[in-house]
Image 1 (tube, rainbow, N blue to C red):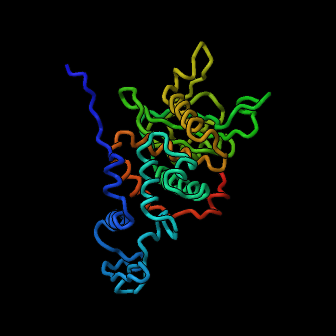
Image 2 (image 1 turned 60 degrees about the horizontal axis):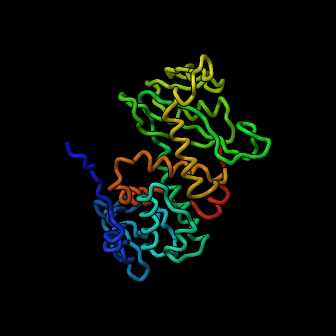
Image 3 (image 1 turned 90 degrees about the vertical axis):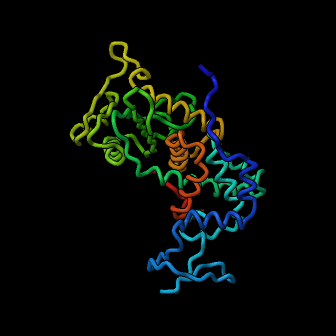
Length: 311
């Protein structure tokens, strides 16, 4: 038998620059992605328009509304050239650990605040696309914390840590399917119910530990299996192998690339991690998929990003 592993063909750096090295090439690709079947007016759904070159907008021939190529996307009102946005999207999609704002600043020649907000907007698109994901089959559900250790304070009582829920599908062969991670302000029964109700299918089985916040899941209609870890030598890593693997990988991703994440921004970093994880078998299409995602999400403004809060 041949020992040669199948290699996934991804978009190389050379191929990327050949295809998207100019703003014109990027604009043409953005047009193809946003209006696959031709222009559609967002106001009246009319399909015919004329291009107003002096303003760089498409004007609907029916209602005369003017629509720019970037309106309604994360690129709205940006002053950064599209070729630099495309490079940021490429790096976020193709690198398994993403890219830091400091590295992006050096690669595309912008200020650190500009690089930071560009990446946050891309992460916002990634996280938004993951909010509607519903997990099926047997699902491991647990909680964990983001944040470094503090002298004299450990675990749930440590101030400054960000709690989050993590749910992972387990397929019939025992492998990992898709996963969802979501930060919360506090670990409570009500938030556990809301998390389970929004991302888990009621017709499938949920496995949790014996924590009291999960005890009401059965009453909501889930087939709930609670396992008290620590009793009779039961280890959490044995009962929830994929959840522990995901949490470990997440923390290595944050520590290795970003060192630390502020709690109010955690939802976007968790969304970035889940986005790439759930598309790990689509590596060759990640740039195209992420570009498409970025055209479907309304950009958050800088004040909105800075003021973000965990619910």
